[in-house]
Amino acid sequence: MHLFYQPDPKLFELDEEEARHSYKVLRLGSGDIIHVTNGRGLLQKCVLNVQGRRVGYEVVESVTMERRAFAVHIAVAPTRKAERNEWMVEKMTEIGVERIDFLITEHTNPETVNRVVNLSRLNRIAASAMKQSQQYYLPLITVNNKYEPFIKNTTEAVKLIAYVPDQNRVEHVFSKVKKDSSTSLLIGPEGDFSEKEVALALEHGFTTVSLGPTRLRTETAAVTGCHAINLAQNI
Image (cartoon, rainbow, N blue to C red; front, side):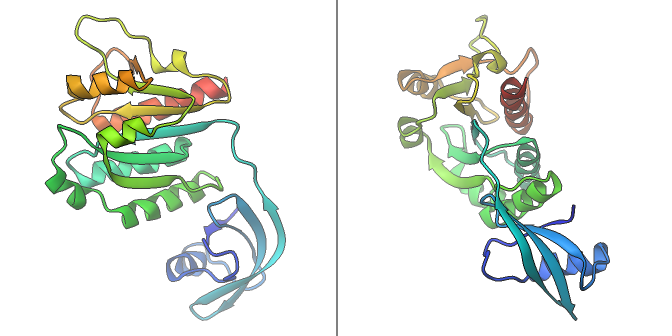
């Protein structure tokens, strides 16, 4: 199935990038069937109408796909390199994530955040990953979230923070997931969360969890946690 993204369901035309992909890469032409999603659950079966570089379409069938019974919410401190943040968003979208929030923590350098977290580019990457993995909901991505107010306003049914104190045994995230419930998982920066930040999270209902016996990079930890939550929900 050739799946395209058009956020405006009333436009009936692919944007320049999507149009170019349809006729240059996929070699589609007028009369061919494609599917279009708005990233909010709408799935449309369409007939193409190619006129030069403009690619319009006629909708012949529409259906609204239901959201999953559970939701995965990953809140993560950005890494110092843009490409790692982009890889992280791409892979979590492919696996399945409803929301990704980038946090400003004590060990995050706020001066570098705008350089390594480009919201417009991250949304484009997420849209591409959504199409590639044949999904119909685009994850919500937010940036520059200050840690304390974010923690105080987190409302998911299950609230977890990836943090293992020295010499303490902490259960794996997999064991803390509740079937068909929303889960929020906090992933710290390269310097980890501060003790104050961990205490604040615990005070507001978060539980510490492990992501395994090895020390992971921030982006690897986020993807690992996202996968573990999805796996726990689908077995």
